[in-house]
Amino acid sequence: MATYAEQIAAYEATRAAKAAELKSLMDKSAEGGETLDADDQDTFDTLESEIEAIDKHLSRLRKVKAMDEATAKPVNGEGKAAAAQSRATTVAAQPMPVKSAPGVEFARLARAKALGYLDHEKPLEIAKRLYGDNSPVVGVLTKANVVAGSSVSGTWAADLVGAETGVFADFVEYLRPLTIVGQFGTGSIPSLRNIPFRTPLISQTGGGTGYWVGEGKPKPLTAFDFDRTTLDELKAAAIAVVTEELLRKSSPAADMVLRDSLAAAVRARIDVTFIDPSIAASAGVSPASITNGVSAIASTGNDADAIREDVRQIMATFIAANNAPTTGVWIMSSTTALGLSLLLNPLGQPEFPGITMAGGTFMGMPVIVSEYVPSVSAGSFVVLANASDIYFGDEGGMMIDVSREASLQMLDNPTNDVTTPTATSMVSMWQTNSVAFRAERILNWKKRRASAVAVLDEVNWGQPSS
Image (tube, one colour):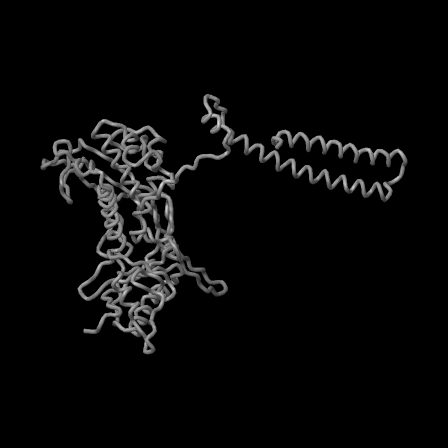
């Protein structure tokens, strides 16, 4: 079979001949001062269609030739086997790496980094040995120079930011679906109002008043009230300490421990702070919960009629504020959601068919369930939040630091800080053969207006009456 280059050359010669014949017909017509006769017209039309078909075929040939050249291999004539391999048109298949469970690749990256720091070996070589040359961890470590013991700005973590399919994004993927905050903007749940940090937020708190004025009478003045604020960068953080012995285990359990220790700690703090009415803002440290300062409405009862009355009351708070919850989202415990799903009407049908213990919809609006929705002595809370009325700032990532030399106060309420250091008992990571992992996520939120959230308390929907 002729090569692609030979085929292209042959078709180009054929096209040139047909183009010359077509030109000859037109020249003959011009010399005689007449239009083409019937036979010449047929010949012209035939040549024109043939040239068009050749042009299309040439275009296809050139594309295939380019593809062939792109996959060409150098000829190796050192032996029969090498020569046969050079002539082969097949390409060896490369197996695709199996996708790990969310968060595992992040844990593996942290583990390789820590072991490299402990053994004075490159994390890249450790990752290759533990997880293979084609693992996502190896892919990340080969993209940047690795500085032992740190992943702050300027080192390998800086190159991870924005790599949406990398190990960095893999950890966030595991963390977000478990938080209340992370479920906004997923599926049918509306998004919070995302804004950049330190952007001026100007709210109108008073609308002024207009008046009817009689002829020749003075016109009253009015005033408008405004409030100006910003959303500052705040951080949720957790430190987990593990032993070197744990890190050195080849069992996948070591990877899972690292992942779960960091993710669960940050998840709990974000959830509790976001929803617990008792949490007020701490300047420069943490935001207030979206329910803080909201006057709760007491639930009227457990059965379907009482539940509908509760919904009417909670909706009335939005209507009274001229703020219809067009992006409303229910937030409740899984126990409350289960109670709703179990309620049946007299025909044995679900009273609220859209909801399950895992969420769904209730009264036409999506439901987020979380075990971190607080309970009270007489029941639980149910929150209705207008998502578009909640400002939300999120740096979009997690920073991880690893240290073997640090000394830590092994408490969940440490007293040391850089401004007022105090003498206290410290534990050396180096002396105890331990490694400390620190995870931080920068985020903040704030209600756009006071009527953004309504709260029901003492809720026992679907529970048997006492």
